[in-house]
Length: 223
Length: 390
Image (tube, rainbow over all chains, first blue to last red):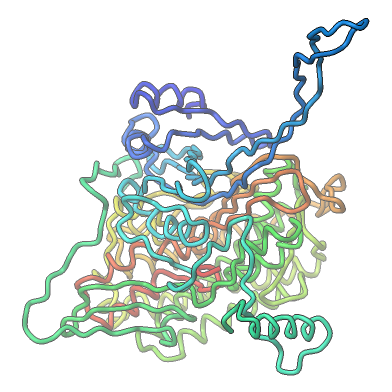
């Protein structure tokens, strides 16, 4: 089988501007993966499936991964010009101060596809796509038109992670019920305060039940 | 059909199930088969639209048994997930253990001692035999052969479960494998008892085959029903006996050579038509191949430890990285995908469930057939809801 670098070169030759990046995997198994620009997802997928050397006709596994927003604080040296009295004369002097700056690197949702070839009996080739952020730009193109096995698995990723697969023929919740609002596999998911308490609560459960009743009385939760 | 002759055509649009028109006479009937229909092997629903007896639409509904297994796996340490994997496909807990152990071993580069590899193969093949036997039993039960074939299958299954119980302490929830080996060693008496059970299995399969293979009712109800085409099967990610019944030669034991499967001689049974009968026959023949593997493996189980002495058990923190490990489970390709960020519990823990993905083509297989055949087609897929819904 071709190495990841060779596959990367082949994709770039076939789909110009696909923006392929190799994500190396430090684990001993060294299954490196390819990060591909989401815009070109379908074109790249069709190439991977139909190319004669690769012939990745079998999409085994589709899954999502959630990466939270990361707050990064770094120390920066800043040089400022400060008015200062030197030897009784007002002068403007350079002063270097160390400042801590914080910025937030936006998190993203990632869809991971594990591809194998039944015809050539090789694999896996791992392909990843990332959304722009975790809140309002969570669309990725669906690969169900290319590999039918993505049909239920992309529905599951939509259900549990909230990635919206555009072009999916039947994007509905699959494991959670239709009225469910949140995405339970996200890293910042908080369980709703609506579980049933024991009929005769005691200890911890009693405390939680009392808190819950107080919340209901205050109108914070409905039930 | 050889694997190389199969080529997924460039498809215009997606590989969607065909649209079947009603003949326009009478009304359409919408039936919810399940979630408590006895043929659904658990809680599973099919919303079926019927035109008379003919199925013109079928939508599977999942999630009745959903417990977010994957999130449970991310909230606890690597080893603590091992007993939970038993509950995925509760007919085949040992192969689930193996798949998970394999994924973690790939993640940390852990070697497995020789004796443990032999025990794993022996247990996995025993699991395959009892799974296939009971699947065939259930299929016949649904065909109307009330009780008898199922009890024949369960009689053998019980012998195998007794072996599991004496080795692991539990009939079904075995929780036996560990990262770098197995939990306890098998005694010489256990190996001897296994040899004895295996030596009786061939005559069981003979008997089962004699009763059923040329049975007129079985042939009439199975042949040409629920046909699946090989190119659709590959495109839809179908795996296991269901894929091989369409004629695609793809067995992960042969492709990946995981464990020590390359040391044993066995054949991969293939079907021709991809109908229910072929799926049934592939399982029947796979049982024979499993018996052959068992005979080879039991001949010389090497002495030695069953657990790598260097394997880390306490404070188990894999370095950052990811791995995808998969095995040929009785139901198909069972894979585990793990991402580690260096902490004691996985950052991402994903199960690739063969049962769920094999249901992708359920609608395609059922469209146009009678409603009574839906039960059989569904039974021939071989699913366990614990794994479908996770």
